[in-house]
Structure formats: structure tokens, C-alpha cells
Amino acid sequence: MKHLTLKPLYLLIVVTLFGLHTAQAANTSHIILQNAENIKIISQSLAKNYFYINQGIQISSAKRGLKKDIFELDRSIKIIGDNAKDQQTKDLIQFTIFSTEELKDILKESYTPENGGLILDYTEALLESSDTIAKYQTPKNPSKDVEMLLMVVDMKYLLARAAKYYIAFSAGFTDAVNVAQANIAVDKFGKKLAKVEKYTYPPAISKKVIRKLARYWPSSKSFYRGIKKSELPTIIFISTKHMERSITKLIKYHQKLVNK
Image (cartoon, rainbow, N blue to C red; front, side):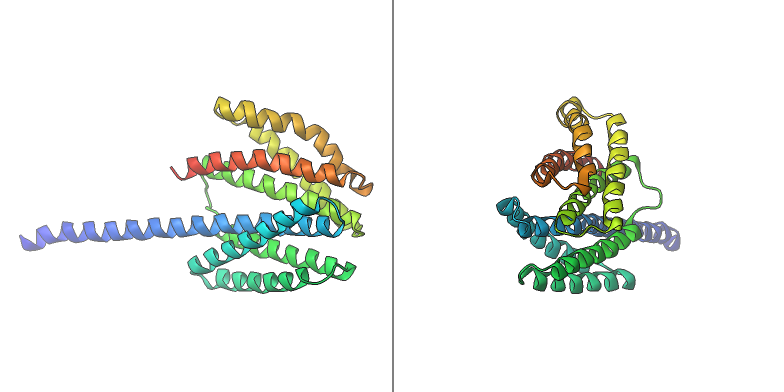
């Protein structure tokens, strides 16, 4: 009889521990994914702010943005490093640390076209490493809430990317590949916005956020498309900030749904 009573108890303990382990693993994966996505955004925002400062446009705001970028970058790197278990993620975050150290050294130096090129290179390296980490942690069959969260986060990244290439073009980085990347970011943003517009949000979001983005984007898109003229850097900077504010509200809304 003892054996019969202990067996169910043993199974209960095993199931409970296994369930706890699974929940902890899922939570760790979520934390790493969230911070990897944050680094993706920062990689573009940092370069954007750097070029705005050194082009003498929106200097005060860009300096505040750059300071925040560095702080958030260091924070996200530490969180991923503290939670990473697999060797590939550990290796990638170590490379991210190296790239960040190089970036910080360049930021201390006077602007030169060579340093501008290095900023573009290192921030693209940050993007690639963080994007790879994010792919490792993204669920194979994500829920609708997770899909929507990842999509609106990606929209913020795409805006920063388009703005980065716009101001980099103004600084002399007129390579056809850079122009193509800016236009690709604009196209992807528009497609994701169309999906967001079809999603059912509560009235407070749909009326104040979605309608604003829907009204604002058509004209803003034409500004980003004017990269080869680079006549509107201030409008691009402010337009990006306006839309980022709205998208941040969407991110917070979907984060709440995912974390329920």
C-alpha cells in the first residue's frame, strides 16, 4: 500500500518540477527575446542620432536620444548575458559587447567620414547579432498576441532604420545599397501598418493611435522616399519621433496581452 500511495505523490512531484522548469525556461526565453528586439531598435536609433548630431541637426534632442540608446544597449546586453544558457547566444552576446565597446570609442572621437562608416558597420553588426538571438528565442508557433507584439516592435525598428539611412545619405553615404535598404524599410513598415489597421483594438487605441498613424503615414512615407534629395532631415527626425510615440503605445498594449 505504501508503494501505491507514494507513486502518485512521486509523479505529482515530477510533473510539478517539470512544469516549473518549463515555465522558467519560457520566461527566460521571453526575457532574452524582448531584449534582443530592443537591441535591434537601438542599433538603428544610435546610428540615426549619431549622424543627426554630426550634421548639426536637432542636436539637443539627438544627444539625449544617443545617451538613452547607450544606456538601454548596456542594460539589454547585461540582461541577455545574465539569462543566456546556450553557447551560441553567449557567443553572440560577447560579440555584441565587443561591438558596443568599439562604438563607444568612436563616439568619443571627432566626426570623420571614416568614423561615420564605422558607426554604420558596427550598428549593422549589432543588428545581425541581436536579430539572430531573437530568432533563436521566437516560439515556433507563436500565439496571435505574440505575433502582434513582434510586429509592432518591428515597426519601431523599421522607422529608425529608414531615418538612419536618410540622414546617413545627407552625410555623404549615398551608396545604392543604403538607398535600397531605406526603401525596403519603408515598404515593410507600410505593409505591417496595414495589418495593424485590420486588428481589433479597443476604442481608446483605435481612435487615438491607429487613426493617427493611418492619417500620418501617407505623407510621411513620401518624405522618407525623398532620401536622394535629403531636403527634409528635420521633418524626418520629428516625424519619426511622432510615429514612434504612437507605436510605443501599441507595444505596451500588446505586452500586457502577452504577459496576462
